[in-house]
Image (cartoon, rainbow, N blue to C red; front, side):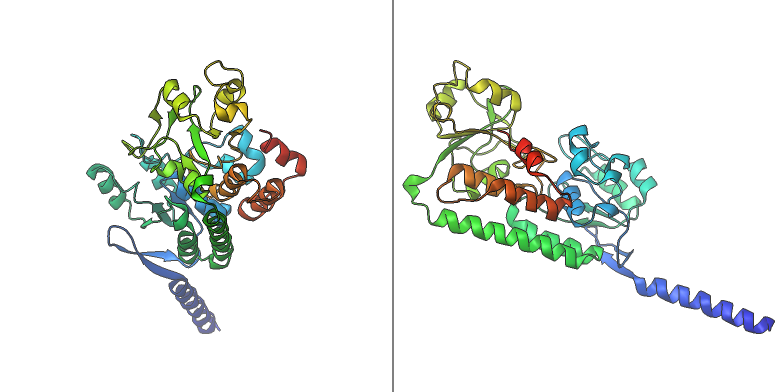
Length: 342
């Protein structure tokens, strides 16, 4: 009887070991290392906010760390566990993630992007020592999102969910392109993107920060080559007056509230015709800073604002469906009206 029990025990251990071997898989990371990871990841982080938001859309329960703390106004729209997650920081503009926090979390996989990889040799060495797979997931442009969603879904064992998000992204890009392709060149709307409290920071027309203007068929009035990837090009009010745009997209609510009465702004064409729009920002900005999957509903919003006759949609209803799919939250009509209040 004792031998039988021992044999059963050995058999159970063997089955358990075999199951773990079958469940595990290898992945080759950016450093060329072959490292094991489970078929269905349970803890993941991204060292850039764009990747973090993409992972959140796939499955918020697997996120193990955030790049910034959750703001009070975001809590209603995000999974409750987000407020309890540790903040790992991020790469960019002199910032680096907290190595000790990453070691404490022990994620199954760390995601990065091409922008994040312009790291110092010291940081690279620290990442290698941690012996956690570091995988590239680049989503700087909206056109990269469909493949990025599917790739991440395959790696993380959530392919079915990723396909739904990929399909929405593809459909939105195709829809916008079809509308823009029908627009005569001489009917394209001129746009100024006003950043900062004074509205005198903006982006060059070639910048990724204003990709939505290009995709929506707008003509960005500030034509130049960006000096750095972070943008925020300074301009003078005289320059903006000379541009005299048909539409102004405002990032800052304070500017939006002042612009209709400010002496140097109120005589501009966009202000006179009431075509100044405050970009929605809850729970994540729809346009930029930080760039995220929210830009897909943002693209529909910009396209509708620039060409309301050519692109006639109920943006509130579209946004409700978007929040349901990407964020997993039901938004009432009153709540959505508040988000879109300007």
